[in-house]
Image (cartoon, rainbow, N blue to C red; front, side):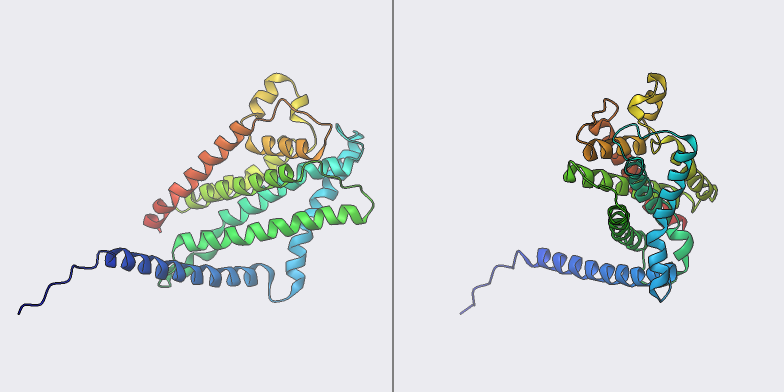
Length: 274
């Protein structure tokens, strides 16, 4: 008697695909972890001094900004503490700048790793992005903690909004870092331009002033600077008494999304060039 035939298993291809995806994800996770450890050792050395120095450097930015403000003799436009006002502008700027700069240099500093099997450009960027979100979190904690320790009253009115603004600054740094970092593989001048926009934005993004208090024709130009929007949004979250007609959550989200999409879209192009 002929044995009945069993129906073929329908879920085998799906299970095979899932196992393949899991294996690939595991491999990329191991590569990213290895690159993170190498990056940390290269940037900060084997001891703690280099790591701590990298974290306290933002206090130098704050000191310079304080010195400039004292020389100009200008009081804080909102609130009664000039140091707090400057910090609300410097924190998002520093989170953006450090992320932007480090992610932009990813390929330039790690290109030899691409010769190893299994290492992809995306792995290099992913490692830097993880490092920068951790570093940014520590920097924010150190700056706010240092201000509290020396006697400044750090009172954040809206913690979720404050955190969200810093997250937007980090995402903006990822986006601009990806754009300039990937573009530099076929246009090396992009690294020079990417480094120059840091000092430029330091002066015009609202660290020392309120964008909402500027003449309309100037604020209309700064409206399309996402960093100006982020700084203004963070101040709205910090100061309960501050309201701004300059800040637009919708416009800012669109700008960051467009820049982030452009940066991600350039990664496959970079693979072909590299």
